[in-house]
Image 1 (cartoon, rainbow, N blue to C red):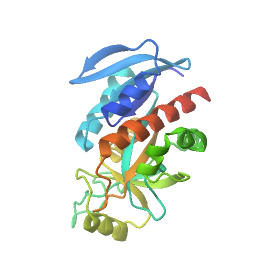
Image 2 (tube, one colour):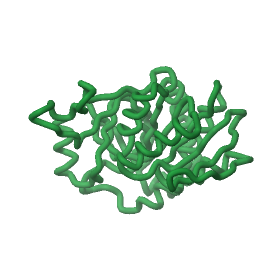
Image 3 (cartoon, one colour):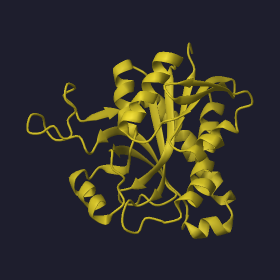
Image 4 (cartoon, rainbow, N blue to C red):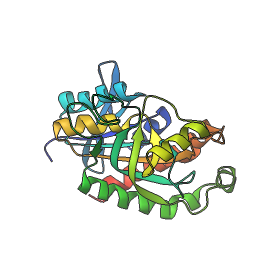
Length: 251
């Protein structure tokens, strides 16, 4: 592979967990973002925070491709569950991405991205299949290794790995009214977050393979778990590091 693999995390705790796997990272600042160059399982990697929201995500994706010549991008983060059976502690691997807040109607159909003639962008099939296998292998082992108190606090019972449509938007969805509206309007959606579709559009433009995995932290409704920092620290960051480790170890 000519260029490095990008590992992108949505939040600092996940980034730190991934960096702990790397023995030789070195920092470089581009566009106000800190990128870490190093190696993991013999792979040349660049690790960075995405930034929150679609504009920050698009800037990060473009910098990775233009300045670091990355040949593929793997994104890990958290999301709110939407699909039936998508529970807290589950994992969603994206196959397709859609901006739920894109609306240039009546000039264009709702959700269609102007200039593209489409509303959805696809993850890379081969890389996503590899990420799916890595995620499934982690879910078979890691949840059982978590302390009983953590599993009890978040109701983690036989977490599952899902794959399908991931929604992105510049709005934090955290009420039952909002999540119900999304579920009714986009019934195939499995989860909602704030960056994936932006990465997908940039990667489509440049022809760079993308794969995204999201750990479900809540159901994006009024009952969303209030102890998000604990979930991020004790569950999601461990998932992220283990999945990235498994993905690169298998290649």
